[in-house]
Image (cartoon, rainbow, N blue to C red; front, side):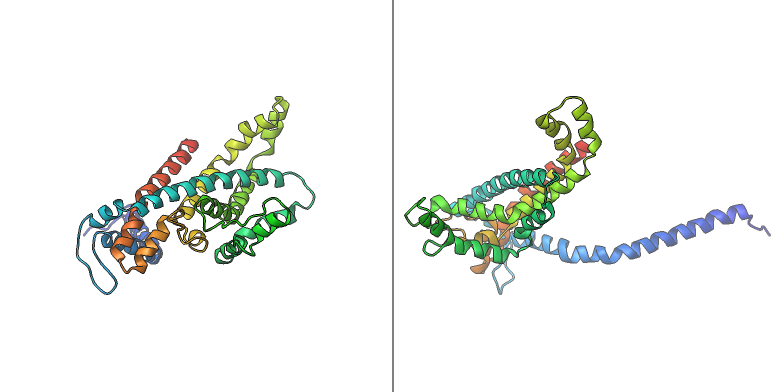
Length: 304
């Protein structure tokens, strides 16, 4: 009869203890994993499947391959939605970056009352989107709207401008309201990044004789680069998937001048063509995936 030595028993006990720890870790992660699979993975996969069917409300639908995508590609409204979505994302993100960066650099200085100024700048972001865009819709009204009243009372322009009902002004009106609603997010993100930049770098740049512009490109820009990349990514996704800023102002009109992907998908839901509406959403996936991969590669390159 052989008796196991303590040296042989100790590794076995350690393995059993390690297995218990791993099982406990899996048990802690399991609820979150199931929640993600149920609320994200399943609806995501189901939407992709539905986009390849002719499903309408009240029926299961049959598999029709790429018929929905081919039908959308033949519609002028679809191509208008592509162009308008890209245009709104690029222009609004550029304006939000310029406004948010400028205000962040200003508030970052030791100015009197800057705490109150920060709070006031966050009001557009704190306001519910529904209330914000309905307020802008009232301001854009051709008769009795605040903007036209200011123009006529000050003598700048005596005529009546239908800001949301004219193709020449509808897109600009949507962009202005969207920038006003979204720039505080850029402002607070960049301001937080500025506060994390070591002051020693600015002092060293001053000793080297750098001016304000050189300090910005040599110290400030590298210090806030990663925050700006993440903010661009989040803002682009939110704007591309945004619905209320277009629907509450123009509903995609006039004549598809402000039509975007979410509104086009909503029109598909209104006509009960679930498969076509899902195909519109699936069309956006490659563009957003490329944007995510590009932003991630830039961040990883900075870390390297």
